Image (cartoon, rainbow, N blue to C red; front, side, top):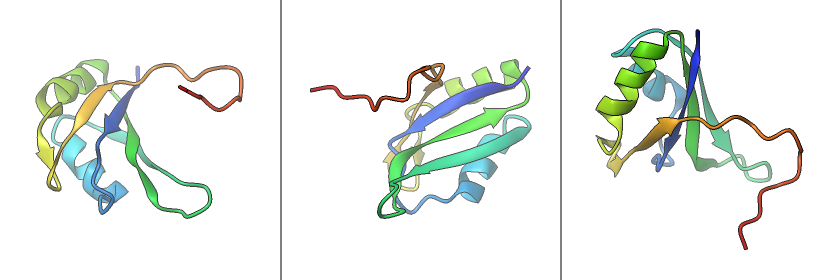
Length: 92
């Protein structure tokens, strides 16, 4: 079963192919999606990577969390399920 991984603290220069190559060291990568700002198209500094195998995904999370990539320490965890409502999250 596929597992989705949250990848935070990305360098704004990171592209999807480079991120995919990083995770491919640990198993089959199904998809890589760097989240961008709707108005500017610039990276928002985080992404989601989907891996084909749960065990390989967990291995990648453990191995890559807090490791430096493109000059920044990555913040990697299992992605939380998406909320059903479409309201933007506001933490203020």
